[in-house]
Length: 296
Image (cartoon, rainbow, N blue to C red; front, side):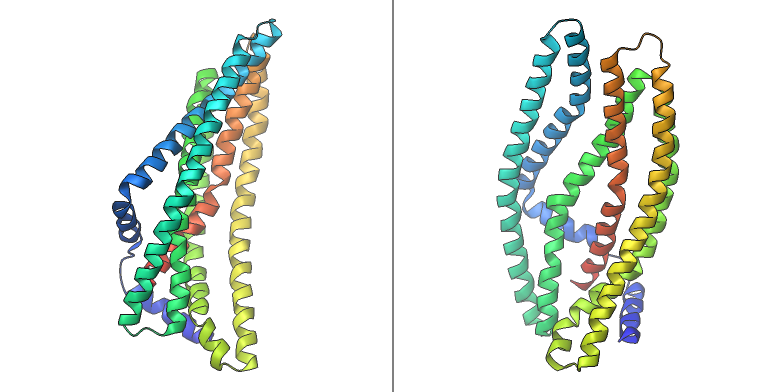
């Protein structure tokens, strides 16, 4: 079984360029107005979220001076963000559910006309759901990560310029870590999807030993993927801890800094950290979709 998986993976590597961009692009063109509207809501939601630490810091400073003006600004900003978020969640579920129904039915019809085995059609119809999930979940996660990272460090620069350079210094090794992570993940994803495509056939005609090896192989794939992500995340967290410790000392030494400003600085720093932490999961999804796009 492992030899068959390896052969399939090698043949796909030789087969040429990935069609991930074409697959995603086709879906986006077909539903450009609906997806465009939900992404506009997403941009509005993240813009309002980016203002929250600033407004919260202003509210803290005003309350310490017996003024409630900053508090009302914070409440208004948070209420606006929640309204946009609620509207987007209601709307995009309907849009992306219809996209999947149309994409899956078209894929099944196409592959049936090409005389593809039923077991593979079932697996590929299930795998095709990940393209919709990518547009529905991973793209918003990527946008939020970009807002958190870029917006966070730009707002930090307004408080202290050295925080901007410290965050950029951290971003370089994190980017290299995720590049290595993506390359290591590619082979594991190919093997995992090969096993999924053969699952129905093995259940129908495989021996007990074949079925046992199949599920043991699936378990090993998941473990390898988890180990790769854990190593990447662990090394990233060590670098983040160094940044947080340095920032704590640096910010608290700023002359005449207000308590609300300190709070805002660390909220923006946490936004940057959350954005960095989300990268391994996004890299994993992209690596898996690249392999799925070759199969479809």
